[in-house]
Length: 106
Length: 114
Image (cartoon, rainbow over all chains, first blue to last red; front, side, top):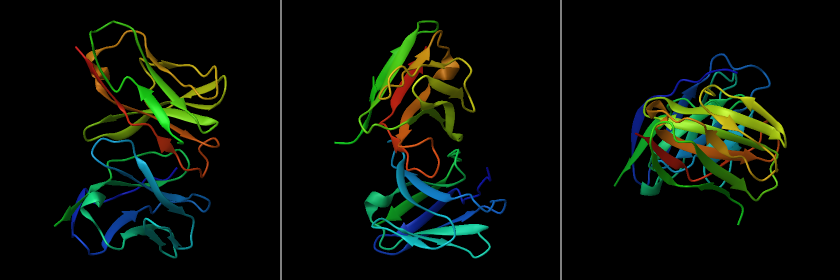
């Protein structure tokens, strides 16, 4: 399974869009991209996943580049409750790295 | 309510005293797994189970045992706990064997081994 690279931390102003990048340059053709988040030592929570088309659900949007080597998770209107560690995962073994700690600032 | 439950949520024990952390899911999921989370290391998979009576090692299985006698339960057993097993543990389940399926996580068990 491919590995991912994410920035260790990001800040976002409340009400603005949070754009969280993820690089997965070694992704293979049939590997999905998953995003989970973990709020303060609670169990990780599934957000969204996709293969090559952009995806949107009630929580977020997922934009995957055409070459599939990177993706961006978009939280359209970040709230304080979105402060969490966000994990980008590629492949089916759900290898969680260290993720991006997103802090939403009032 | 669909959920994954773990017990206990918090546990302090001493080196060498056997303990079991229970995990139960009410969603009829086939796939279950255990993770540990340590600062700076993210979540690491300990063991997983594709179905009843089928278990396999994850990335960090040393010092742990599991069993899957029933579909809903997947206990984690530490036969002789050591201080390096102090960690936050999560149980997770998904409908099928981890392939493109959303994983549902339990609330976590914080273990301190003295």
